[in-house]
Image (cartoon, rainbow, N blue to C red):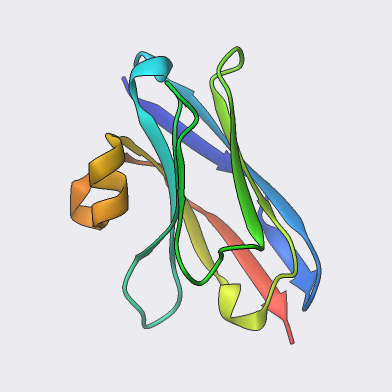
Length: 124
């Protein structure tokens, strides 16, 4: 059974930092792209970042470029998302995803598996 378990969400002040983690199991981790999507209240899900666990190739959504960093620890089957200089508009439920790289970049419809999400709230 594929499982993606997110952790690290919470409440942070504007300009602060958080580190999210995704623990993956139930599939061959090295064969997948792991990504992060987010959904704010009343808005559609949007792609945040994707990383190929095979070669480390990474993609970032325009809204987070320069502030967020995605990384993979293949030995632990985990992917982390370091979020710096957080803004109020980063407030959302953050979901860990698994699939292929093209699908991760393409949008929510291209993702094969979803975690249950972790909530990030940035106070203004």
